[in-house]
Length: 132
Image 1: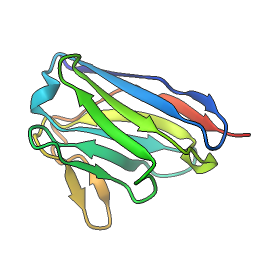
Image 2: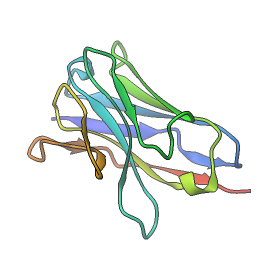
Image 3: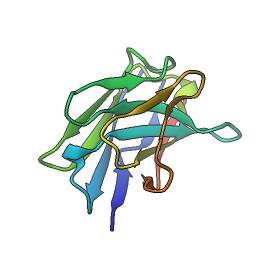
Image 4: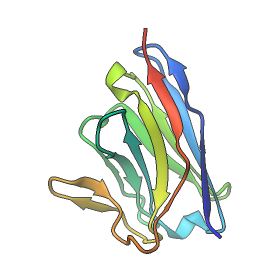
């Protein structure tokens, strides 16, 4: 059974940094794309970032490009989301997810999303609050 567990959320002041972790079990992360999403209260879920397996390509939402960095440690079966220059509008619950495909899905208008709804697995999320 596949499980994803996020950690690293918390409260931070604007301009600060956090690093989120997504530890995966039951699946060898090296072979699959891993994505990060977020959802703020009253807003729709937003794809934040995604990393392909194999070719090293990464993708970012326009709202976070240049501030967030996705990475993976295949030996630890873990993905990270380094978040710098945080803004109040980054406040949300952050989720990692995979649909067990090798490549990320990025659609015009929709942005980062999961393609295979039958195989997608989500973590429980970790809360990030950016406030002064």
